[in-house]
Image (cartoon, rainbow, N blue to C red; front, side):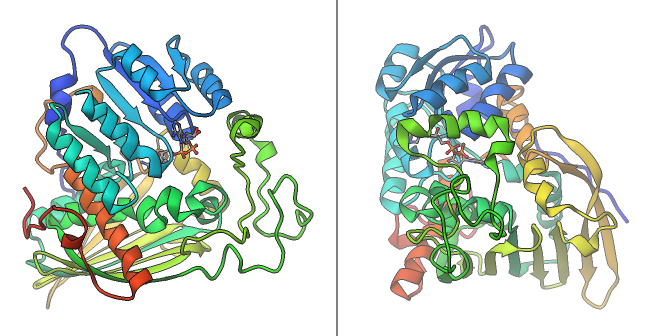
Amino acid sequence: MSTLAIGGLLSHPALSEIIKTEGKLKVALVGTGIRGITYWGKRLMTEYPDIVEFVGLCDINKGRLAFGKDYIGTECSTYPDFDEMLSKSKPDLLMVTTVDATHDEFIIKGLGQNIAVFTEKPLTTDEVKCQAILDAERKSDKDLIVGFNYRYNPHYTMLKEILNINRVGKITSVDFHWYLNVYHGASYFRRWHAYKEKGGSLWVHKATHHFDLLNWWLDSDPVEVKAYGELEHYGKNNSFRGKSCRQCEFKDTCKFYWDITRDDFLMKLYAANEKYDGYVRDSCVWREDINIYDKMSAQIKYANGVLVNYSLTTYSPYEGMRIAFNGLDGRIDAWDGIPWQREKKLAQSQLHAQEMNQEIESSDFEEIYVMDNFGEYEQIKVDRESGGHGGGDKRLQDKIFVDPNAQDPLKHSAGSRDGAMSVLIGIAARKSIEEDRVVKISELTDLKSKPVRN
Ligand SMILES: NC(=O)c1ccc[n+]([C@@H]2O[C@H](COP(=O)([O-])OP(=O)(O)OC[C@H]3O[C@@H](n4cnc5c(N)ncnc54)[C@H](O)[C@@H]3O)[C@@H](O)[C@H]2O)c1
């Protein structure tokens, strides 16, 4: 057994430039939904009160905007109109936490006014918007930061360290499979994520995390993608359906019945504000107009020759992932959340809530196995953290707000090119299914794939 030190602090030009030595960082945020008001709202107010101040909040839903202000605990002004917020609040940093397909509008406007922008993943949902964002950043004096919190998860950081030292020789292929359980997976089919035009499908909304990890771990860019996908569990694939879980006549029989009324916070954030925009948080997972895939599989070829086999499942009994890196001299295996590989039984129904919770609890360890060809295997243990995306959320914020000038030996920090390369794999996968062909990354934007990044 061995333990490698987890290093890697953030050095991001976009950040070091805007973090002030005197006075607080003025932040304006658009999108006062759950991610915006919890992780980027209340948490900033609680953890960095001496570093950050909110100068404006914006959302198209006036009820959610008012609730968000109250929940965050800020005295700043609220704006139903984004342009007004940008001109009046004069932020140092704009944070974009809206519905995925709308990110481009705010990113481009922010950069256009030479304001540094942070956007939640995914960068955007199609290649035209992606190109427009890249063009806007090139014209701007300021940079874009993309919130890839998964990179900061200690388990994934350890994989990066092992890969960086070429522990099993040149990597030639990767097997990567992600499993969303029937609680977390279903949650994407209850709301806007269920429509390609809003979230780009889970190829983009969810898999952007996984494709970014691959790009970062392999330190190379994708060149082409062939994908398959179907919708054969959720959506039209059921004999009955209702409007929402609250109004459903099949409450007693539907295994996917979800009682939002038991969660006071979600009732106040979403249900109380449905009247303004018709956004129903507990919509039926069997809606006939759902148009995303619920099983997805892709082969991705990288500029350094690595071949990746990737899949995403959305109705697994358990939440987890498996990954293996095949090298010329051996293999690296890792996994998360596989129930029978842990001594403790995991309550699948609780996992999603725990994951969204920003309280970090350290609970035993994650494993990585490294095995040499003709040799022995080595077990590497990494302290496990539950909550806030495996501890990645907290680390990302600490590095943004506390010490942006620190060294970044493992290249944790992510900008527009990283955001683009990860969504372009998902966009290529979607196109590959729709057009039944191999899609080249170079078809999509003017970015050129590099065998070694930087
Ligand atoms: N990094 C992560 O792990 C992570 C986790 C959760 C969510 N996210 C991302 O955060 C973002 C928000 O997700 P969420 O779960 O909070 O969604 P949400 O539905 O709770 O909130 C989205 C908010 O955006 C608002 N909005 C939509 N269009 C708008 C517009 N044109 N102008 C202003 N406001 C608008 C909505 O009214 C809503 O309040 C998404 O991009 C999502 O992908 C990232």
